[in-house]
Picture 1 (cartoon, rainbow, N blue to C red):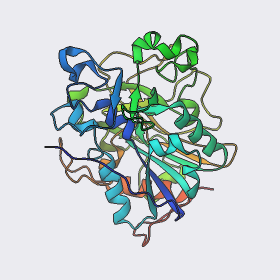
Picture 2: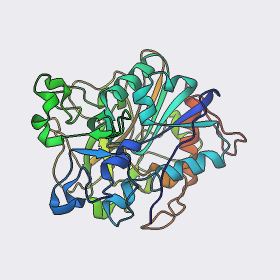
Picture 3: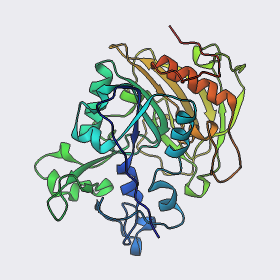
Length: 353
């Protein structure tokens, strides 16, 4: 049949971590009624430019099944955080769109899994929060790639229809008088907001949707960094099957934050169709990075969608259990640096200075 995802907010209780559920990405891939924002899972290979939140989540195989809900990636990260007793509250990216102050009741915002579709308001509000000292952890990839906007539902309820023209952005009536309204990629000349200015990395490649449950090895290249403390990892060591099915990397486009620290560089194999990359970019490399913003905010980017499967592999398909205590330790170190400790730490923690 179907299910409905919802998030219960508790805005009156400050917490260490704010977990942002990515409802816009669910909506983009959801093809209930026959149409998503993708030709490949829309009727007659003709995608929609506008999709509604007021419909169930389709229970179909393939692309829609794994990307139109919170169960493929977000579930495993939330399950692990709760099992460790972290102080977490939850909200959606629509909440971030509607309320610039949603991010300020937590020490850190978590972006998890497949966080692809953002409005300009989301981008601006998250960057503003970083510049005001809110820490950010992107346990995700292909993040802040497509820009969307919202329109009312047929009954007049605000922000219930998501608009994204993508490659047809010039056909959007809203662009006729304002090219900056284009619902295209953030890195495009029309928007000129490359996502690596916020994340430190940007989406460079994927292995194809038939490889969603597979993965490439994560290769450590900076083992002396405090994020690898108490793991026993050395440069060149690998964490199996954690990079994929989409990945991010450092690029040379002039937007990279100063002081960027590269933690890992992993070899991948992209499936083709490069997503508007700067000349010279190698799409067969994925990077994990961190940096400290001028405000003092800490920012971490995993460079992969499926990092959380190393924390918790419950119900994950493909190659079986990928749970790895070293990934759990790295994540514990990252979250400690962002101001969050587990309730009863079972792992040694070193907080970077």
